[in-house]
Length: 120
Image 1 (cartoon, rainbow, N blue to C red):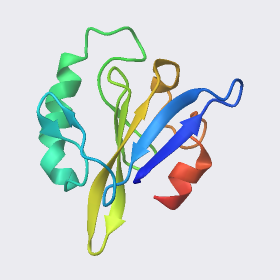
Image 2 (cartoon, rainbow, N blue to C red; image 1 turned 90 degrees about the vertical axis):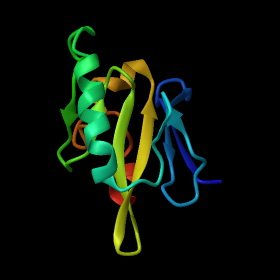
Image 3 (cartoon, rainbow, N blue to C red; image 1 turned 180 degrees about the vertical axis):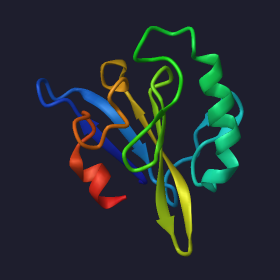
């Protein structure tokens, strides 16, 4: 189906959805396609969108860059990861719940399971 789901350990409720860059459904945010794009195509959009999130509460504002170089927009609950597709990396968005958003780009201590960081 092209979607990976991640659940909270405490109560097993859905907390994140990752969309496969090659087999997943296309998702859009305000008319911008987020799945299966070259990362360089989305960089300007990510930077512009981050500027619009500056007024959000601390921890959810602006842009975060993870240890592996992925961009995160905590205010949207979005981590823009990459997935290899032949000779190219393609965008693999991970959408997270509000309580996971602040630490969502942290592959070391964040809530997104190791499986996501290890495979893609």
